[in-house]
Image (cartoon, rainbow, N blue to C red):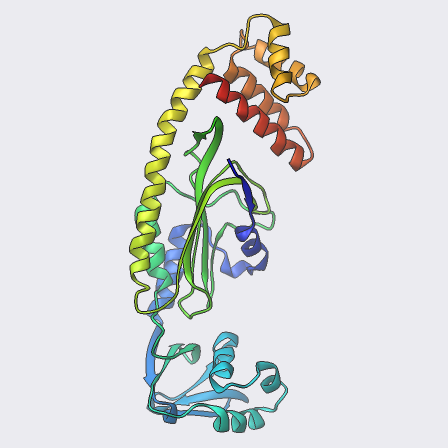
Length: 343
């Protein structure tokens, strides 16, 4: 079984500002819905797009709709549309930049799509772009991922639920979905993301994991599957596909959890042996250090017998006292592997 460590959520943890982090899907939904309600699409032919000075900085007049400022993302898109370097334009005065765009913005009859909120243009696209709102994605999660929730808060207090003007990212796990895969314990989780202004594709990555640290690195993940789609005319069908992916993850969780329950029940009945020397020999044979094995046996003996479950539980408690994260992970893996003895 191949395992890997996933760092996508950790990257989001450290790049997001506090105002882009949300405590719950409900709070995230409210934010995304408000953002959608306050934003509007307008279409204009290139001849109706006129660069001008607005409040001392570069802005765009969009026909009869009026003049608007740009944020960093829409300004980058304007530079790309005009075929000029963003760094070059940033070195120019607003007056010179206005003249530069007047000479470099494309002509023709194909309209441009401007997505604005209040007096700020959020994005600029051509006719080939189709928007999928963050609010629609979160609504789907609230309906079909009801057992999933954010992991424990990261070291900086971030939650795994993020959204801003440019994109959205959610990290969700099922903390009660532990199941057995090849004799080891795993729980299901997924990352999901979108940008309603074209900053990134829409996508989901599902996985089964064994641990999540405070940096939101997902440790020892298996069955990692990714699905993405660009914001073209078929992008709305991605929501249906993501729903099916989540439903499939839930169905596999339920199937595996039933098997895992049987394994745990058997582990609670099955003894590694009545003789302490036999038990110690079995533990060391399975990679448990002699000193740790003896401590685990002392704890398990308080339960009255050396069952597999009692020993696994004892080893897990001992690993929690280890300072080094790598040692804890290794110890937990070895403890979990003992459950295979009950299958």
